[in-house]
Length: 227
Image (cartoon, rainbow, N blue to C red; front, top):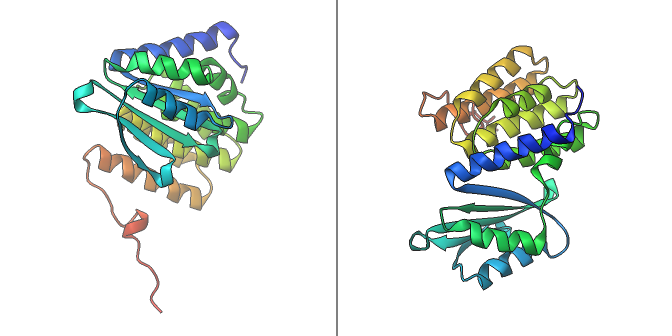
């Protein structure tokens, strides 16, 4: 597949920003250098945003209150090589801008370029996972991107696409397109173990959409051998 030119990549990035702005839900991937995570926390604190809680051993930190009109999450996504910065609410842009100015960020157009560079499956899969964290709404570009990775000859890339589709569906709060993609992928998938992973992902999305779920498919619903 030919990688889109710079203008096309920037168009995709603008579409992402527009979707974020319409939903007052912005997500950026910060360049993960030494100190990026701590710097993002410090900037939010200096901006007067109250720190709410931390989780996952301190790698996820939440800021904001209901009264403040804005909330933030800073997530050290080490496996992806980025720090994810999320802001929600009408009052979020000002503080987000201060963090981005202090840390720098990976342009969405660059992430799209990496995701479409399927010649390096691991590199592209990492970009797809990062974009999935940032996908607040489904569109044709994301649909085609996931189709591309589900059709990869590399089974690991197809597995990563399955994870990314599941994640993107949850971020976008819309499970139906993800279910359709996974169903199509399942029909073509030759490896039984990956088929199992796809079925589990589909059950997660069905549960999220409020549909009946086959609990026996999910890991917690499987019987374990007795000694």
